[in-house]
Length: 169
Figure 1 (cartoon, rainbow, N blue to C red):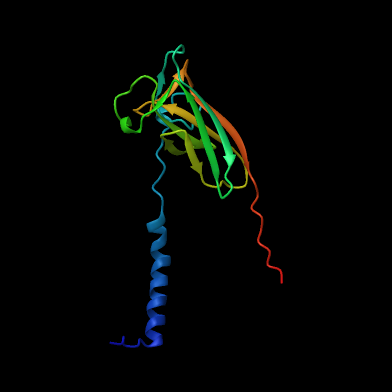
Figure 2 (cartoon, rainbow, N blue to C red; figure 1 turned 60 degrees about the horizontal axis):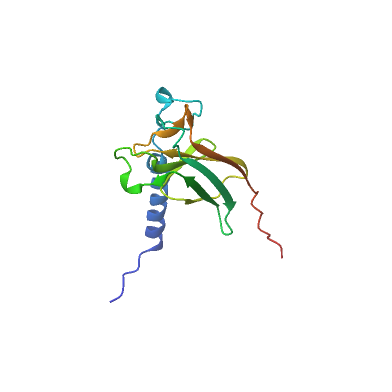
């Protein structure tokens, strides 16, 4: 069984119509919802953290350190080292337990993701200098804190300029 041949002008007409419809509707389909305004519930000087603070006992408080390395293929590998803290992905949104929860990772103050373990991969960043920070958070997403200061680690990295491709003969 053979397919009937479509006249070229019909193909061109429908292709042009689809392209035009895409140009008209793409801004509505791809538009991002407006960012949520967290300014009403910021609880400390780090504006990138919009969750409530949960004070912990300094004597038993968890600690966090971070190492960020350029990945050989793409992006950045973020390695976390925690003490006196348990990652508990199964308890997220549940009842807070002492020194248990997850981490939030930020790039230049913008939250990127929740982290449920000691390793995370970040995509390539724009060329230039970037501050990567990570906070420890309770199961209800409260930022763990000691005397009003979040328990966090910060590292500054520099994303190299992408080398252009050669188009020589």
